Length: 600
Figure 1 (tube, rainbow, N blue to C red):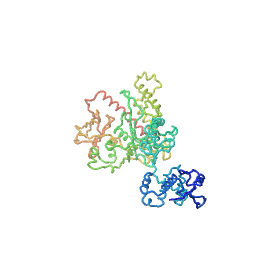
Figure 2 (cartoon, rainbow, N blue to C red):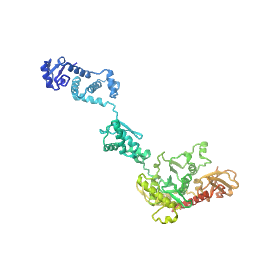
Figure 3 (cartoon, helix red, strand yellow):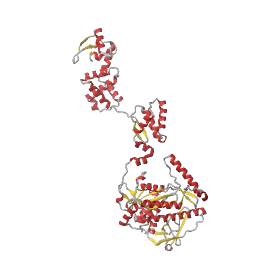
Figure 4 (cartoon, helix red, strand yellow):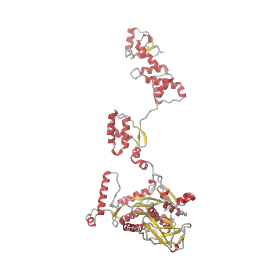
């Protein structure tokens, strides 16, 4: 316990004047017991017994704060400051001294002689006042600081520092904006102001709020607004592959196409949304297979398009979306056949009986990662294809646009085109500026013309350089030719098939709903076992290919002529639809053959 105190130490204490000179005058008036002060500066020191009672109590309280706390008080201090120390650190005398100093300073209010306390602590530990302050800063660095965080979407991020907003208000405003970005930042700011008035939060102006929103990483807002797919498209670096280094026709990449146009069929008087499927050679970017379906695409659309792509030779690998195997049975049959593996019946039943044969197939099947279809190289070609169609300014455009005004204009034009298509011919002639909907045959021809234009236009490559897809493919195809398949083999590989037992040289089966087929061949007269029949689902007048199930060899010459029995359940309307569809698909087949001109 220090019994002697200088005038500087006593100034400002209860019952003592606030200045050193005032203390000295009062000491002379009261005749306090004093002695000369040792050390630099000189002066006098006064004994504690001569001081007023309030002053002595204040000195005792100050000394109590300087004294080392007991174990319970120290643990309470560490817990309140969220300080975690190991037993070895707690036993370190220097760490104990720092904790003692920091605790004493924190217990002393700044306006009640904190500077004098720092001087007393410096004298107690025989260090300077600067060192005492440094010790206090060292202890503050041990604090486990709690940074306010807010959940935006699926991520928790730190709140930007702001003096104009309390953390609760800023967290509320950012969360409101993240939950409804379409309403905008001003709506979120108004909601925050309304909530702050009831919660007594501090809220800055709107400009400050927009600046704080801008401090949040842009990737967070992209993820919230566009989801995981949009985030990867916008933020994840793209992997550029040098596809031109591989042989042409070795890797075929396919994808479905839902066209952004409505088409009118004047025969059936109905509006159609056409679909399609495209196969592209990855090396040259040439579209080698294209098939248009006047309706929703299906497995037959995929295989009909592949049939056109295989006219240049069989591929080594397919590249498609990541789909379920049970939903692509026909494609799997085609892949097995290309690899020379005979598959009798359902391939899934074969897998259960003989094991999975995927690894041994020569023709590989590469799939895009789940929910990442943009990794396929054909995606960029699809965008080019859309631009080629848009340059034609075709009627019936139906694609939605993010801009509300543009979307409304497109909708009004589509409604006008529909009315024009359904109007009498006399009314159509009076509207010279009207485009109307395209006729089905016209649209099919335009699609294949766009494919030709894409194949013969120069393209800039991301890996560097420029190529013309048609020329690049033709040069590579002539340099390294592949086995070319004839129509009979293409039908066997790509067309859907059934296994039926012939009766009197004829096979009868139901191809699809309300589509009953029959095919006859002299070689079937002596056949009593099931045969495999590969048929064209789009052309009832085309021949079918018949093969033996076990040996996969052609039966006779392998050709069965159509011999369709009349179905008593056919209605005139249904028959007209089937006839019209067959006519359009023949037209599509004729247009598809244009793509191979120059290779025969």
